[in-house]
Image 1 (cartoon, one colour):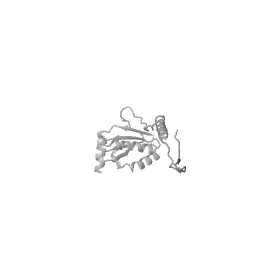
Image 2 (cartoon, helix red, strand yellow; image 1 turned 90 degrees about the vertical axis):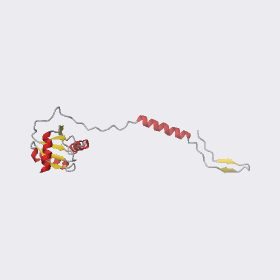
Image 3 (cartoon, helix red, strand yellow; image 1 turned 90 degrees about the horizontal axis):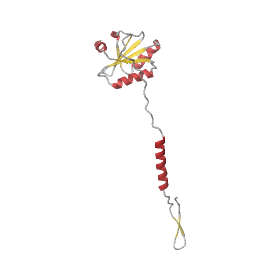
Image 4 (cartoon, one colour; image 1 turned 30 degrees about the vertical axis):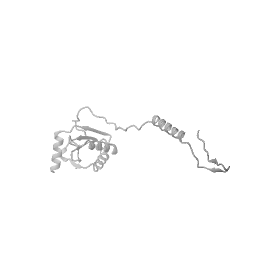
Length: 159
């Protein structure tokens, strides 16, 4: 154990006060034991994973109320309601939330189809999936990007 001495006798019989000295070795040992214990006893934070249910095959049958999101390589989203892609409009990731909220309010059983171009960034797909959670869209799926979708984007750019 540590002992504390703060008096020292001199030859003349007078006691002189000396600075207190504390042996820190046991405290350091205890600190390392506690650190080791808590490192081994705690569980590390588990990564949060978004659950994604993928359909089998490609979605080919038109849904009654559906919005299609086309993620392009220009960090923009082309969207259209229904199956008529000639009325596709372009927006960015800030504007798509307003669009989805408007359609979700109008059509309670709205289905959203997300299609991603091969040149688009993967982060855009993650952002689109985040928007599905934020806008509380329950029915959405990821589908293959086709040549028809590429043509819809091309025609939207020329208009």
